[in-house]
Every structure is written in C-alpha cells, then in structure tokens.
Amino acid sequence: MKSGFVQTYASIISFTTRVLDVLLIWGAGLIALGLRFGWDMFPLPPAYGAFIVIGGLLSAVVFPVFGVYGSWRARGLVSPGLRVVGAWSLVFVILLISLVLVKQAETFSRLWLAQWWLLSGLVLVIERAAVYFVLRGLRQRGMNHRKAVVVGCGPQALNLINRAEKEGWAGFDVVRVFGERPDDTGIAGRDIHPLDELFDYVSSHQIDEVWIAMPLDQSQQLKGVLENLRFSTANVRFVPDLFGLFLINHGVSEIMDVPMIDLSASPMTGANRLVKGIEDRGLALLILLVISPLLLVIALGVKLSSKGPIFFRQERVGWNGVPFEMLKFRSMPVDVEKNGVEWGNAQNKRLFAVSSGIRSSTCASLRRNTGMREGCGRERDSAAWAGYQVALETDRPAPGYGQRAA
Image 1 (cartoon, rainbow, N blue to C red):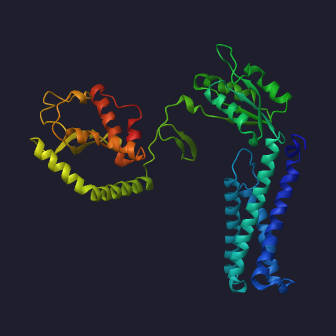
Image 2: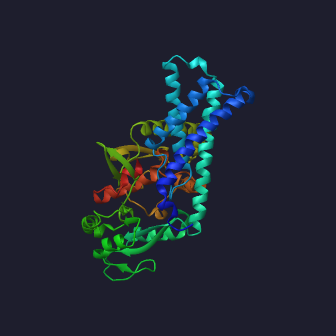
C-alpha cells in the first residue's frame, strides 16, 4: 500500500463505510429478531422488515450530520465511538417517536427494539475499532502518512515537531519548518526556511497540513502568513501560543456565539459554584465532626498554656478579593504583633508551650502528607495568605491570585 492510498481513495472509502454502516444496522436488526423470536420466523414479517430498512436509511442521513464520517487521524478511539453511538441513539429515538405518532408502538416487541439498539451500537463501535487499529498499524509502518509544515520556531512549534516524531501512529510527517529567528539557528535539528517561500513550497510539494505555531512576539507576521496561504488547498491550522501566556483555569468559552480562549477565568460560575459550595460546606462539616475531640484538646492546651483567647483572628482575602475574618488556633503570645503585622520570620517569634505542636500540624503540612487537591475552597488558606500579603505590602494583588483562590 502506498503512503497516500487512503487519501487518494478517500471518497470511495467514505462511501463504502456509509454503506457498511447501513448493512450492519440491518444485520443487527435481523439478528435481534432471531434472538427474540427464534430463527424459524423467517421470512420476515413485513412490518419488521420495513422498520429495519427505514432505520438503516435514516442512519445514512443522520450520521453525516453528526460528523460520524469525519477524520479520525490523531484522535483516540473514544471520540468516534461515542459519536456513532450518539448518532445511532438519535436515529432510534426518531424511530420510536414515529411509531408513537402513527400509533404502531404496540406492533413491535419492546425487547426486540432494545436488542436491536444495543446490537447495532455494538457492531458500529466494533467496526470503528477495527478500522482504527488497522489504520494505526499502517501509520506506524510508515503508510498512509500526511505531510505537514510548521510555521514558527518557538516552544509550541518545537512541541508539535516532537509530538509528530514520537507519535508515529498519528501519521503526520513534518517535512519543513518556516519562520524567522534572530540567531538563524535551527529547531529540533531542522533548518528554518524564510516565510516568503512558504506558499511555493506548500503548492509544489502537495503539503496536506500547515500548522501555524508562531510565538506571541511574532504575531504581527501572522496576517502576512495567512495572506500567502489564502489560495492553498492544504488544511491550515492555528496553534495558540499558550506557552507565552500566563494562564489560570484556561479553557474555551462561547460568548455571543463567538468562541474565546479563557486566559484567566474562574470556573466557579453557575451550577459549578453551587456544587462547589455544597461540597465545601458538606466536607467541612464532616471533617469538623470527625476531628472535634482533637480540636477540644488543642483548645484546652492553648488556654492553659498561655494568657489570651483560644483563636487568632485576622483579615484575609477571599472570593473576588472580598476580605473575610479568618480564625485559627493561636500559636503565639497575644502581644507578638503589638508593633504591627510582621510577615515571615516565624522561627524568631516567641512561642508558648503548645505552639510548636500547632505549627507542625498546619494545613500546609496536612496537605503535603495526605495529598489533598490544590484549588479547593477548603484549601485556599495558603493562597489567600500570599495574596493578602502582597496586597498589604505593595497595594497590588498577586498576579492571577483572584482566580487561584477562587
């Protein structure tokens, strides 16, 4: 098999796959009939036969709309499997609704309907798994590859080149790198070619993919690159330079039907915030109940070993920069900050009898020893402390602090 065999006959292969899906659905319907009523019921009752045929033909219409026949290259098996099961489930729901509307729901066995849906979904997934592993094996042997060029010479471009070389099963060969570098050095052992040669090379060498991975300091050249490629038949893809950005809780949002990359955004909105609040309060109450005997012992030790209140109170910064009053067991004498707040230098501050035990069992030590997740509301204290300290001393919040503490 030549390197470009699948790509050359892609339309024929796609058509064959669509026909095979219909045949598999029909076959699954017949097998389900045999399992439900026995194999001696053939020839088919007309109603069942017509229903099976309609189901297969309807899938031929719905599956392309769901992107079932899109490219699987460089994707895992889960995505195409879930997509085809979802599309087939939609087809089945349409069939069931049609039965209700024409008042024929009692004509068909419910057990047979369930078996048909299950068997069809199973064989469609098995078919895609077989194709996936066959194509993956061919690509690992150097067959069915696509040629790609990378535009850019920063960390993102280097990452793409290394991934293409390491993950040979994806079937991409990076054949040339274009960009501008002040020191005129290469990247990943490859020479960097001028950007003005990009279009001629892509056109003359039948390049399939153009990956634009220009660093932020070269973003002004992006418009020229896109202008040069406007008549190219290659797939042109832009890879955002996330390495050059300070990202907090990044993802993709859609606002006014416009997709946007979240460079710095809190995930605690809507239902997430409600669930998080319930989780934090529920776990906090449970933990307090479990450790309440220990808390009583510590409170008694603080009270008996030092004059003053049991708890230390201080203002900290919380959600969206709103200050709140924090309580914790006091580990220093009450007059230690009589001359004002002193950050750090804890080893030189005066302690009392139970102070060392309290300090050695702080939340930070507990998180290290138990492997707690970072970012949870019940573990925000260290982030809040750092943010408050920076805000207090410099009158400026710590970079990205509002999202980290959220």
